[in-house]
Image (tube, rainbow, N blue to C red; front, top):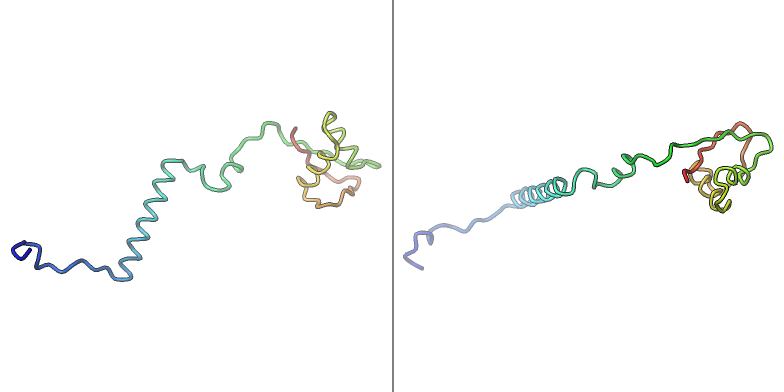
Amino acid sequence: MPGSPHSDRAPIRLTRRGRAVLVGFAATATLMSLWLTVGPGAFAGDRETHRIPAHPARTVIVGPGDTLWDIAAGAEPGADPRRVVQRILDLNGLGGDPTVQPGQELRLPAH
């Protein structure tokens, strides 16, 4: 349109830095809106660190002659001892070694 008042203006051009700022602003605005909508507990790790356990943590001190099997059977009498042993190993970072020493403190899983 030759008679239009906007025809003499040059089109808007963004530099590389201008595009980066625009993209950064859009990403920040999107993340902030998600955070405000879903809540701060939606980010990775927050649920586990702020969750209150149903049962307080229990520990046991290994006595002379105790085995992990005995401890597992006593901790959850109605459960399969194999599963409880594995949960105790995982909870205490013992890997696959079921050997325990007298005086060793073990955390027991909540049932």
